[in-house]
Length: 282
Ligand SMILES: [Zn+2]
Image 1: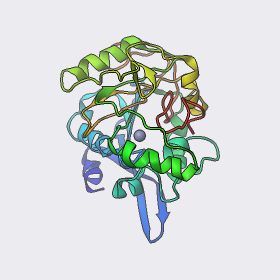
Image 2: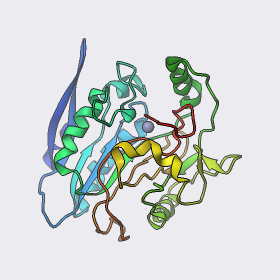
Image 3: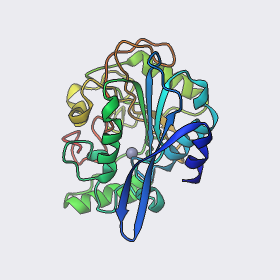
């Protein structure tokens, strides 16, 4: 909170909602470019949709503190979408609801509803959305078993990727952009190798696009958008900045041609937090 508020010297810091989980209350804070220009693309950065994926929260803050001012874009950043989960190192919110399965009409998570209200006026205008996630070892030891227990389903063990990874959106594949991101990340950390099935969290490794059915989980709120699951940083911390989305006919920050998209936040193809390959991740 203090780090976000310190950004107020250079950005507009906005309270876009509150979470009331008595006796605790959390302000939801967004950071926005002070100068917004129509000739600049909008960029959305979100971290901490899953509060326990803390590297995304710190990555977003670090970017805002050190680099964001250098980009000629209109920036909207929400470093910590789920502060209750961040404080407790938890994936869900206080009501055992996964915010990343709640970006939909009538979704049960206040965290997600507040974020959707925040971005609604800019829907369709974002050139890129970077949603910072992380795949932790505790997914296998704690959070996926907890999900199975909550939902009364058997726990099926999975594999935690060791490194940076991306997953493309079969409905709007952008392999060149993904390659550019991976090549850039490979200079600073290792890229996750495929598992024994030549997959990374269920997607086919090194091949774009992933089979269409696997993207089903993201469609509800992500029509026409891109979902890049970053083949990620080392285990601890590991980024899974999964969802990059880009807007109409613009060039992204690396100069690659991109296509239409609209903003959203969501799960990737065959989400490891579903009991089935991909079936209705939310
Ligand atoms: Zn996540």
